[in-house]
Image 1 (cartoon, rainbow, N blue to C red):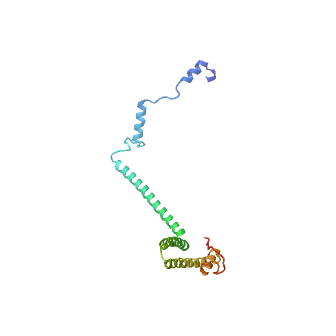
Image 2: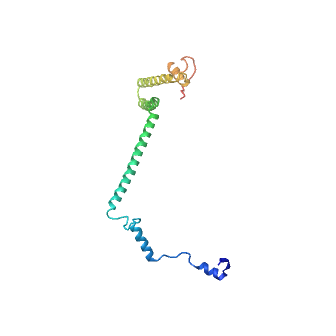
Image 3: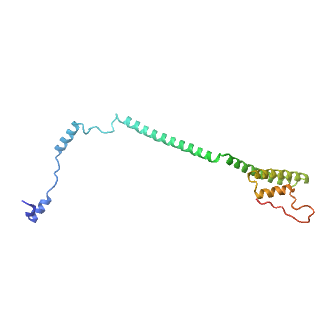
Amino acid sequence: MDRDELTPAEKEAFEMLPTERKPSRILEERTVRALKDRRVIRSTPFFTASRVPWIAAGIAAALALFVSGVAVGQWTGSRQTANALAQVYNSPADMAAARVQSTGSEHRQALAAMVDATGSAELEDMRRAREVALAALWAAATEILRLDPADPATLRILQELERGGRGAEAGSGEETTNVVWF
């Protein structure tokens, strides 16, 4: 008999029939027992008293491996960074520039202290302080010329220092103002 020959009521009844059959409890127990006998499945739980120490040791080993990996990675990274920075900033020119900057700051501070100290000093003390400051300026300008012999500002400073810082020649009648641009 073909399904097309069924009446609508028969088709509806046929559709309402279950397509699967639930196995009985006995069949399920028999299947589980057979799988256990063949050692496909185990009847013991995973966390037994004999396995707990091994599981704890595995977790401890994993944590130790992770922590040591992080420590080695940080040590290696910091060492590489330190080496890179040392190569960048420890060239002789960079070290000399840093030393010049530091010394220049100290020189400016010493001059400021000297100006403060000579404010109430005698004329001879003030003249000596000025000579010392000009000698230091002359020495610095001379070294700058070794770096760049054509530097116009440095050349102008040295010209004024050689003229004695007097500006125009004495007796010319010109009033001058000495200005040195940096």
